[in-house]
Amino acid sequence: MNQDIKTNAVGKHRTLNVEQLEETVRNYLKTRTRKKISNYFKHPKILYAAA
Image (tube, rainbow, N blue to C red; front, side, top):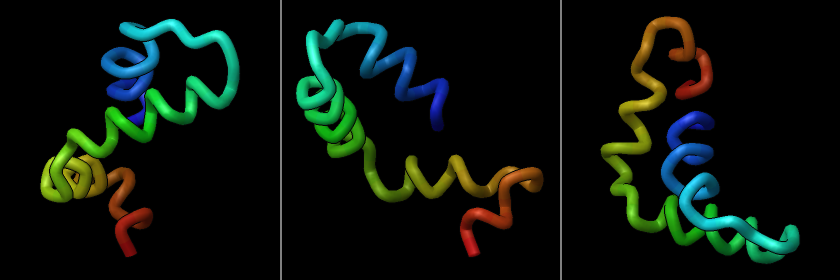
């Protein structure tokens, strides 16, 4: 998930301050559906985070 955000949200929109960075990340995550986000946590190595 971290790499996805860095590549698709932050990497495409350079921000000038923390507030813009937060807004960019929030807007990106809003475009993701719950199912897509939950799929990040189905990998056996990070399954603990879903609990």
